[in-house]
Image 1: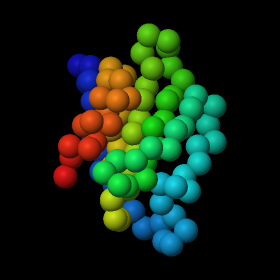
Image 2: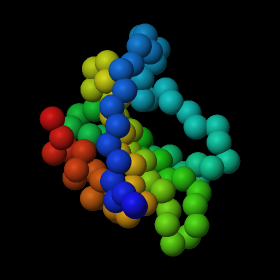
Image 3: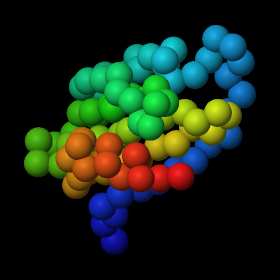
Image 4: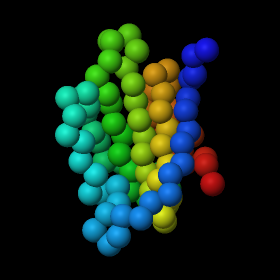
Length: 88
């Protein structure tokens, strides 16, 4: 079964120096990483290398001690941003 969207939530304990703003992806599978904003929270839109017809997009943001992630091969970045903004 193919999924259009995956939503994950993680507990975080990154300390004062941690957080989304300090994440760096050192992988040859990451094509691009763009800083964005989700409801006033720092976020990253990450584009992973994949077959041209099925790019993998990942939106990751932090709300307090919780990291949230949307992952999709189907939705466009602006659609993912709208979904993230609607989550509470």
